[in-house]
Length: 254
Image (cartoon, rainbow, N blue to C red; front, top):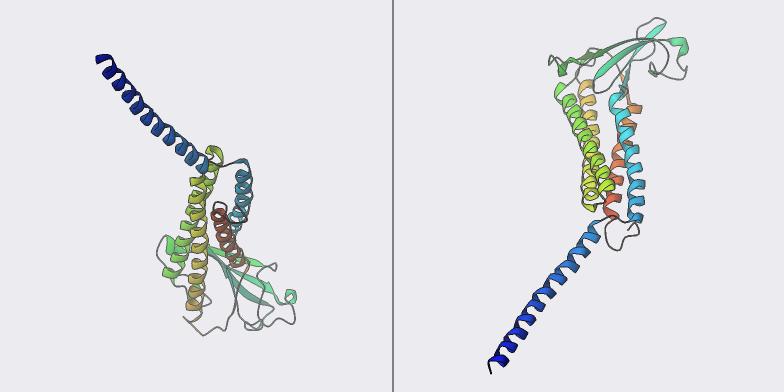
C-alpha cells in the first residue's frame, strides 16, 4: 500500500517537473525567435550598408552647404556706381563677402552685377552676432540676427542628429542589432527636416534684410549652398524612410 502511494507521488512529481521543463523549453524557443528577429542577417546587412551610403551622400552635401558662404547673392545694377567696376555680395550662416568685379567680365545681357564666382577683389568678414551680438550691414541693409542665429542653431542640431544616426548604423553593423537601425532612421529623418526648416527661416531672413532699406536697388538669388542643403535634407529623409522600410513586413525592401 505504502509502495503504491510513494510510486504515485513520484509519478506526480515527475509530471510536475516535466510541465515546468516544457514551459522553460517554450520560453527558450520564443526567446531564440525574438533574438533572431532582432538580429541582422547577411541580406539585411548589405541593404543597410547600401542605404547608409545614400545617407552619407546627404551628410556630405550638408557639410559642404553649411560650411560655405554662397547661400544668397546680392547685387545692384551694373552701372549703379558709374565706373568700370561694380559690387556683389554673398553670404552664408557664418560670414559674408563683398566682391568688386570688372564690368568687362560680366555678361553684357546681365542687368545686375555678378555672378559672385567671377574673379575680383573680395572683402570677407565673419558675422559678429555670434560673438558680440551685433548685426551685419550689407548694402546699407541690416541683417536680422535672430533669424540668422536660428538657422545656424538648427543646422548644428541637424549635424548632431546626423552624427547620432551614423553612430547607430556603425553599432548596428558591428553588433548585428536591428534596434540601432531603427534609431538611425529617426535621426536621419529629423536631421533632414531640420535642414529644410533652416532653409525656410533663412529665406525669411533674406526677405527681412531686403526690406530693411530701399536706398540701393538689389537683385537677390539663392545660390549653390542652398541647393546643397536642400538636396541634403531630401536625401537624408529618403535615407531614413528606406531604413524603416527595411524592417516593415510585406515591403519590397525587406
